[in-house]
Image (cartoon, rainbow over the protein chains, first blue to last red):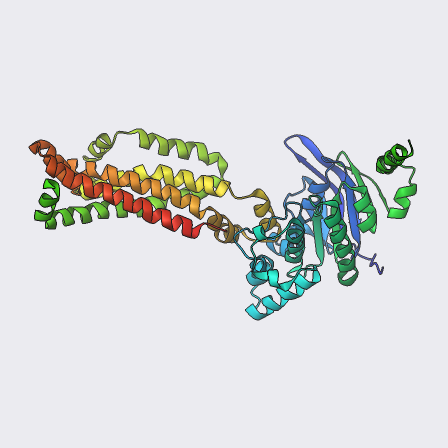
Length: 258
Length: 210
């Protein structure tokens, strides 16, 4: 995979965030290279989601600096910043009163794209995420969970952002659907080369999707490893994850042997 | 049957007082919406303000109708014309259900939808007009419906200070001890309330998202 390592697409420089006296994130340094899929892996409460929300400034850091495309975040208008960053969350958050087409086309419309270009873009995106174009006129409540999540991804990609933030996007899906959308995500990423920051607590997902895995614990970055390195790592936190991951399979195998 | 004959005989007056009644209710409801909806939006976004605002609207609601009309009578510009005064009083009463339902309608919007919208780079006003208000509209309208129905009943008291409306028949009937006259005011008022309830209810269902 061609990685541009010269200027990181996203950079955290000594970032801290606390709210109501609680240290959510402290002394956080991270560089995300252009075109990579960086997975933030950690337990709930480890600060993964906060890290993600710091990137599109849904929360602002208490101290430190975040740079996006080399530019300090404070120098970018927050609305412009967010329009250039796709955002996908577990609950999807589709607008229930809009059709699929209007959901996907909202940002392009606000950005003043002509109507025919929006329509073409919606069709293109639906195909890209593996949905039938006939779904364009449906409402979110008429879709299955997997379809909704795909529409969520299509909506995030609509205005062709360079960065994609994904917060446990496939966490609520059943295992088979999750497998399907993960596979689609990989093929999508091979075509698009977005800079993706992906939050999950699922090691399997992290190993499958990430080009690097950033392990977080209690508001701190523990280590950053490639999936191959992660499995062999002697870091106590990383190996704890690998052990827990293996435990389920092992237990099932042992039970079968008895 | 006596009542019907009486109403037919006095048709022009029944009609004029009904129209007057509609005018009092209509103008006060529109005013209450113009004040109450923005106020409800404000307190839904600045939650620190919600207690004082809702408490004030609540207190107004507890003032007995006749007393409020009486209190306002000595106010200079208002007291000069009874209908102005009645409209102000009715507006004040209509505020609570409208503010409260606007507040609740907007607070009821799924937080995930708002987060997604914000994260996509919608401005606050785009979020309000494209997402929050359309999703809250049926809850807001049900507040308006309650306000209108209360106003139709309350507006009959306006006749006590000479503001006209169907209350005139009721007061006149009471002093004449004539049920026909009382009912000539009460029946059209009840009819108006039902009509308003039905009309706004229909609009509410029409505009319901999904």
